[in-house]
Image 1 (cartoon, each protein chain N blue to C red):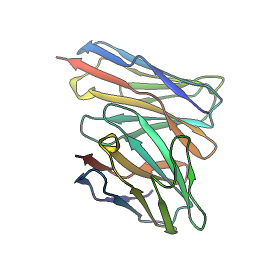
Image 2 (image 1 turned 90 degrees about the vertical axis):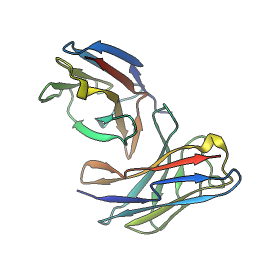
Image 3 (image 1 turned 90 degrees about the horizontal axis):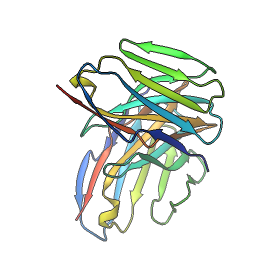
Image 4 (image 1 turned 135 degrees about the vertical axis):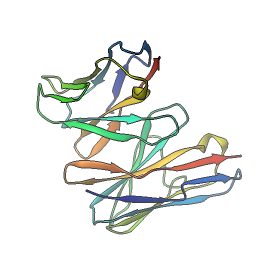
Length: 112
Length: 109
């Protein structure tokens, strides 16, 4: 199993600012995933973060807007840059451990 | 790209009625997972199906994976108010997990 801690759990951010979300796992994992869930919507995969290489972004997401770091096998960060109200979402990190995927409890961001 | 669709988008039922949500993928899946998200909460893993035609049960919940591994269903027997939430399927495509559009279930007492 894997226990995932995300910080912050909630934040209210000013338009035009950037916020970095941290994801800490209690075990070493090869891949970490970042998802976004906009209000009333499903989860959308933003990118896959691999240790030692650049993140792989899904269609519609770019590194300039969502830079990701993966300095080691237990930690990753996602930055939401130059935020606008459309970025108000829950951001979740997840990992595979064994054949099961685990989610953090999410970071609820509101952009005003 | 990979897409996972769910129907219906919403379902309102009277407590005690049954409920089913259907999940369809545009391509063959390695496995499929189901999640439940309560209002204000994060998705919680329910189950994973791996084998073609697999059926699994969790109390009143029955999960099915299609023979072609491109569709799945979740059936709840005799719904209760505690079943309220949004149910997501999520298909695994190699290393990625793509979520379905979700079905929001409302149960009236």
